[in-house]
Length: 436
Image 1 (tube, rainbow, N blue to C red):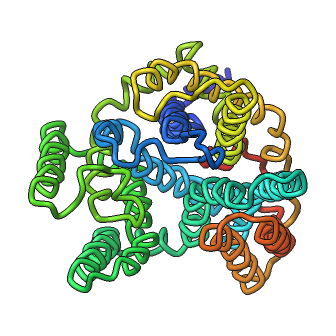
Image 2: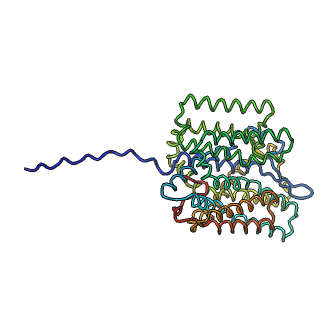
């Protein structure tokens, strides 16, 4: 009699981690919301005898300092960018992808929506010129529009260098982040010693790359692996050191002032943000799965780049309409910072968020459509990334005008043409900022 062998018991496999971290996505979506709210409250318009005047409502205001402690989210944004970017790069390598494919995909998802926005803004400035709007008002509007684009340029740079920085992280993680952090402190020291503020703009690279590198540690699980007490001590120590720099006058307590040019104070802010995120990560993850939080996250994640690119044109349009209404009706606009001005802020902010959401919804397809195949030449890709950066820097340095918009659109279009996405990176991802 033949005895049948006992059936093998299947070895249980551990549950796989979800492809997306919904808690991280929620935090990133909240960062996008924070940016829109901050810029919305800073945009001001007054009507003088000489005509409308666009102003920064926070200039000389006491309230911007405490508000900046809440809404200065850029350090956390770059940490999350490093976290998501490193994981995406590693998954691509596991599928046989290359650094060229990774960078090409990033350039397409970051620059493609920008081409449309810059083109529309340039056309709008041309129309305003034709209908006789004062040139100085148009120049101010162009300048205000271009200011937030610094983030796009720096983020493109950080993502383009991510494969190199990831390789350095794998070889010597602490030496790499230490060198970048030391370079940012050195730049601040040279700036303070020489009195040459322009030196501070070197930290557009060093500060934000350091924070991206900190995100690599979060992605590795090194930060979450630390004891809870250790993380609390790190957060408390960074916060205390940051406060000491404020008291001693090393850095301004206004965290918005510390962003132009960026200072090493933002590294301390990033440590505080990252430590708090790590300490509450499980709680954030649970909350992110609630229906309302999930719906908010999904809406912003799919349209993050569109929201970022379009919120400033929306705000400037709102300011222009307010000034036009005042001129037509003779109704005086409240003085910036006055009680009447503050009383109108809730409606202003809600309107800004609603209009930005509507515009972003209309242009979602430019952010989510699959990218074409990429060049296999690293040199061509480097040239494409360089031209894209030049196009953005042009708008930042010279301001957005009809001429600079035309040139920038041409440079961005050429950059996209050079950075064709390869088959190894063809799996579509939903958002320029939703990099996982």
